[in-house]
Structure formats: structure tokens, C-alpha cells
Amino acid sequence: MPAFRPPAEADSPSPIGPLGSLGSRGPFPRARLGHPLERRWLHYAFLSRDGRLGMVANASWLGPDADDPQGDARYTTILLLHERGKPWVASQFNADISAPPWSSFRQPQALHQPQPLHIQSTAGAPAVRLQLRRTGLPCTSQCAPFAGDQHLRWQSEAGVRAVGDWCLGGAGGPGDGWQRDVDAVGYHERVRGRWGWPALGEWVFGFANDLGGSADAPPEYAAVFTFIRPVAPADASTASVMLWHRGHLRRHFPRRNVSFAVRGQLARNAVQMVPALARLFGVPPMAAIPKRLVISARLGADWTVLDFEAEAAARVIIPSENSLRPFSVHEVIGSCWLRGELSGRAFAIETRGIVEFAGGAGGP
Image 1 (tube, rainbow, N blue to C red):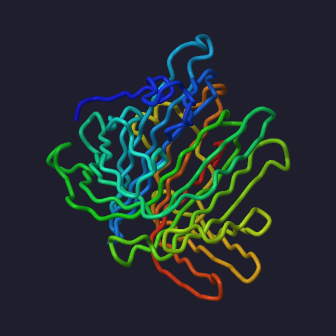
Image 2: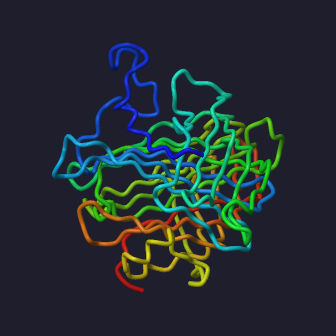
């Protein structure tokens, strides 16, 4: 696949006349990034329906250097793949990606979008070649303001279908290890805002889709949760749990109706640092990853519980634009139980999930 370093969509000419005449065609507004802390992300996460494979990928537009505010936006892409019972494999932050990166947050909206998503490490593996389509509708956009003038805005969509080929690499070299026609269900998210990693503090995010049912239908039930706790101010924390039923967002449980609990610790040898060059940063260890995470939410007679048990984690080291303090994101995969009651109907699903634990690193 030829190398691709796409510019921010704001830098490309508008195909619909004057900028803003019909609004953004997505996934982001056509506005130039003008500050080194401004960011835009497209996030992808999938789990194969047979429970063997997992994927996390992120495509990011970052603001220009502080000494050149009129300079070009920077672009990074990273891909992580996991096979059950084996370590995570990851690209560096310079993976190649098809243009434009697939996103369901585009106008006009379509349930079936023909363009595929190709992401490949410059070393050849890991890599994916996926045909994606949405099966439901996204949640409402959410925003977390903090640290004076910083903020994080995101919008999530569960039940995204992916069919295609995955390459985790193998003994035969980067071209070996392809697994064909993998059927997966996952999650897509767009994120934008302006923040520095130390000020962001920490977050916990995760999702679970029902992996059963028809391949042509949305998951029977799907859930996404978020918890963000910035350093300041003291009341900046926010949290939510969103519950989909057959492609429609049925409940959005707000912060005051959500609780979190953790138990135990994931074994240190089940956590690996990625990408490989991250070891050059010399960052200290981060706090231990919980072995079990339980999120519960209730609103009136409706309630849900997501019970996640971690199996393996990849620690992604994140360089900071305005501090030498280290920051990292743990991508954690494991078994998940989703149960609850919605409009008088009880449900219980045993599935797989992916959780992100993110924050600073200050000691063992």
C-alpha cells in the first residue's frame, strides 16, 4: 500500500462551494488547527465475532509547532492488533492509512459506505484491510471543559461492522500471518478539542457489543462508557453510560447515575509497552491496571451493569507537547458481561470488550 500522510480536512478544498455554506461534510469542521494543543482524532476498535481477535487504531491531526503557528498540522496513525492468548502487536505512530480515513460521521450519511479502511505499519505488519459499515446511530456529542481554556469533545457510535483481512505478522516475516475474511463488530469515535496531556488527568473508557446475532443486523445490545477526571478544577470530572438496542441509543445515563468499582490487579507480565521505540522515552511505570472493572448505571426503572475482566494490556506511550511528564494509554482486552433491564425487558449477554485506562505515570 502506498504511503499516505493526509492533511487535516480543513486544509483541503471544499467540494461544495464556499466553506461552511452547507456545514461540515465531516467528520470535522473545515477550520485550520492553529495551536499545538488542538487535536482531532478518529478512533476505531473492533473485536472478531469468534472472540479471537481485537483491534485498536487511532488517526490524529495535531496542531502546528508552537514556534510556527501558521505551519502545517501534524498527522499520526497507530494500529494495535491482538490475538487471544498472545501479546499485542503494534505499529509505530507512522502507519499508512487509506485516504480519506473511513468515518461514519460524514454527510450525506449512509448506512452502507463503499470506501474501505486500510491501515498498515511501514514495516508491513501489523495491517488490516477492512470493509466497514454502520448499523446504527451515534450518541449525542459530549464535552468536558477543564483547566481554564481546555476541552475535550467526543461522539461515539457502537455496532460498526467490519469484514476483511488482518495481519499480525509471523515467523515468515511481515508478509506472513494474514487472517482472511475476519468478521468483527466494533466501535467508532471522533474526538476534537484543545488540551495538554498532564492537564487532562485520567480517563477510563470502554465498550461492549453483542457478538452474536445476524451479521446483517445491528447488535441486539451495545454499551459505551466514559469517565474523565482532569487535574483541575475539582468539579471537572464527568462520566456517562450509553446503551444501544438494535442500533438505536435507548438510554444515556449521566454522571450522577453512574458508579465504578475495581478489584485486583492485572499481572505485570500481561502488560507490554508499545510501540517498540517507546522504550527510548525512559518513562516510569504507571499505576497497576485493575483486573476487574464493574460499571453500573440506573435511571428510573432502567439499569445496566458492565462487568469487565482484563486479560492483556498494551501500554501506549504518549509524548506530551507541553511537558516532560509522561502520559500513557492502556488498551485492555478481556471478557465482558453486560446485563440490565430496559423498558421492563431484562437482558444478559456474555461477550468481549475493550477498555482504555489512561493517565500520568509517577511511580510503581
